[in-house]
Structure formats: C-alpha cells, structure tokens
Image: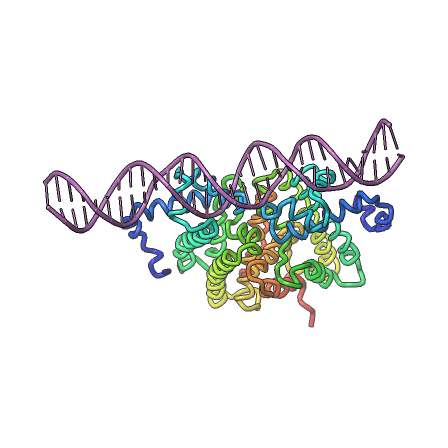
Length: 209
Length: 209
DNA sequence: AAATATTAAGTGACCAGTCATCTTGTTTTT
DNA sequence: AAAAACAAGATGACTGGTCACTTAATATTT
C-alpha cells in the first residue's frame, strides 16, 4: 500500500467510477472536517460534490463507511505529500520536522478555521463508533511513527537535547501538535502555532557557538 | 464571581429550581461529554437527569444555551478544585503542575473514555456556533493562565530549564495537554499520558546533583 | 435485450423546540 | 382563617423539518 503511494500514475487508470468516488470523498471530507461528523448530512456531502443524493450509496455502504474511507484518504495523501520532505537528507532533521508541522496546517492557514479532521473525528466519534476510533488510532500511530523516525535520525546526527527515548518524544510532540491545531480552531489566531514553533527547537541540541 | 467560587455555602441557599437546573446540567454534561453535542439529544439529556422533556425549556432557552452553561459550570468547578492545589506553596511548583494535570484526567482514568469536554466542544462546534466557540476560547484561556502563573512562580523560585517566556510555555503546555487527552480518547490506553508526564519534567531545571 | 449502474422519490425514525393543560404554592379577599 | 384568585412550574403530546438509508423506476452499457 505505502509502496505504491508515490505512484500517481494510477490516477490515469482510474475508472470513471473510481474518479467519482474519489471526488465524493474529497468534497465530503472538506465539509465534514469543518462541520463535524454529526453536523454533516449525506445531503451536504452530495451537494458539495454535485452528485445526486441516491448515488452516495452506490459508492459507500454507510455514512460511517464514508468517514473511515475519508480518514484513510486524507492521511494517505498527507503521507505521500510528506514522504519526500521527511526523507530529504539534504535538509537537517530539525528543519524537516518544523516544515512537516508547518506544511500540514492545511486549511488552517487561510482562514484559521482548519483544525484537524483526525482530531475532530477522534473527539466526536471515538465513543460512538468503534470502527472510526480504531481507524483514527491507526492514522494517529502512522503520523507519530513519521515523527519518531526523524527524531531518531536527528539524535544520531546532531544529537537531541533531551535524552528521553524517541517514541516518547514523538508521541508527546504529535499530541502537542494535535492540541495546537485544536486550540487554533477555538482561538482563530496564530498564537498556538507560534507557541508550538517556539518551543519545538528546545528539543534539539544547542548550537555549539 | 471568582471571589465567591470557594464559598460552597450557597449550595444550601439554592432554591429547588436552582438545584434541579444544576442537576440537569450535571447529568446532561456527562452525556454530552462522551457523545458530543450533535450526538446528544435533548431527550438524552432529560432522560439522564430523570426529568420530563418539557421541563428542559423552562431551564434553558436552547440546546446551545445549555452547552454554554455546561461549559461554564464544568470549568468553574475544575477551577475551584484546582485553586487550592495551584496556590499551595508548600508543594514545589513542578509537583503542583504535575498534579494539576494528573488530577484533571477525570473520567479518563476510570474507563479511558474521558477526553475533555472543552476539547470536544472546541473541535465539534467551533465552526457551527460562534457563541460556543467564544465560550470555549475563554475557558481555554483561563486554564492556560493558571499554568502560566505556576510556571512563572517556578521560574522565580527554582528556575526553568527553558528561557522562553512563560506565556509561550504555558500555551504550549496546555495545548499539549489537550492533545494528550484527545489522543487518549482514540487510543484508550495510558501511553499518551505517560509520554506527557515523562516530557513535562524536562521543562524544569535539572537537579544540581 | 439482458445486465448493470444511476438516481429521484420516498420511508420511518428522530430532531429541537412549542404549546395547551395540569399541578402546586402563594397572595389577596372576605 | 377559609375561600377565591392568581402565578409559576411541570408535563407529555405535538409540529415542521431533517436524518440516514431504501427502493423502484430509469438510463446506460454490453
């Protein structure tokens, strides 16, 4: 699955059906990310995608199924987007990590209404849908692993100020990041982001100067 | 308002009406905290409180109004709970801060389904209800301020490892904490909490030993 | 024309919020 | 102090509307 993720050529081999499905996923995701799961109706989704209502159920077996697929799609896309960055050894790990976060504020940047779809679903749906909870947990784990890898590399290369194990630091950092995105949703300002980006370098070794 | 917060005697002067209202708030809050705003119906709330449906609207003018009052109540109660702790100078600031966090996992501890009502409302409702968003932002600010106070005190007393301004650190820390609570909701395990509590001491000065 | 994909029009359940009616408690009148 | 008048609170049935999901008729493909 991940092995193929960089290969965009499959786009051209997608059938009309797959394209439409993909479109539904994209458009619906956008709505659900801002209005939440329960705040988004099937009607909202098909409206956003300009697709007749009845079509929805030929592509997804339920609203829950849609959400799970959307969850998968959004994190997979983000992963692809970030794979190059995170493994680009021409940039130092610290810089890579910083960019990783900043690049992923997504919609948040434009109108400060972003937040994180994963976070949203986690908070709203973890208790109601076990299937969604499991999927969210998996996606969260994947992202944490990416951070851990960079952290480990940084430690080996330039050293880290903290002696704590990378899995702990990665878990902490990623959760801190999710909290930051959440806070931005309520405060609609850049302060939470600033705080995060200001504290982040504290993890890394001080310059020898 | 805060000046009176420690005075529990008003409980005995509460009218039947106020008591019932309070009960509705407590019971409904519990439901809404786990199932979310849109996932909780008025019927769910009155069922939880064992109160007939019709009564709801003699106490609250709308569901939104209920949520805002619940938000206020839950954070005010937490504030009262924590005021003694946070201002108890017989405990060192670092220990106070740690306890502040640990004491507030709330329901999370028992069945790992807790999360944070504030966080929940923030993620789910910030885009749909400006009134709720503003209230959440205010409550979030209050909590951040509490942390900032302890941090500033710690800095003056024992010093802080980080030279960054306390408001920045407090903002970062509190958001990290909210993210941690969120993550626990999805993962239903103690790992996020452990990561947070392990990294937290890194903020403080190393022992001179 | 048979098979398959698409879709508009439902369907019953449930939603937030209202309302007419009933109960309870207090005040005023006698 | 008893009776009558009034007020405030309590209550479940009800309303218009929306929900996720189904289905039967239509369009498209083979």
